[in-house]
Image 1 (tube, one colour):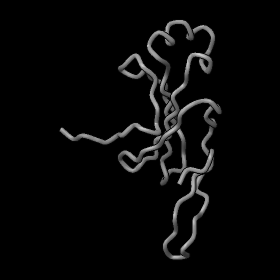
Image 2 (cartoon, one colour; image 1 turned 90 degrees about the vertical axis):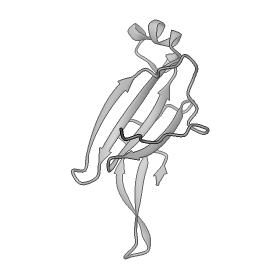
Image 3 (cartoon, rainbow, N blue to C red; image 1 turned 180 degrees about the horizontal axis):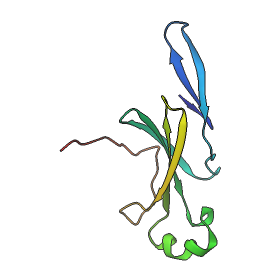
Image 4 (cartoon, one colour; image 1 turned 90 degrees about the horizontal axis):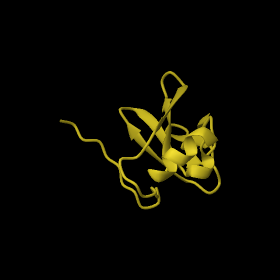
Length: 105
């Protein structure tokens, strides 16, 4: 469960939620945030608008609709890594209505 910037996991033995970790970089208040589990890792995704980007990158990335900031948590190693990418489309991304899934070829 993701509660603001805290991540909790459910422990069936104790029938309770245990704090697992804290997201290293909290999403800006006006941004959309979502999460998915892929290959056993938790991906916390934040769509950053042009206002949230570094000023040197803003003008180019605003034309593409923003930037996707992904923070990835590995539960066994209890480590975080992150990446920044641009979505393949020009409109903004709203995680309240987005659906993500993995496809194995």
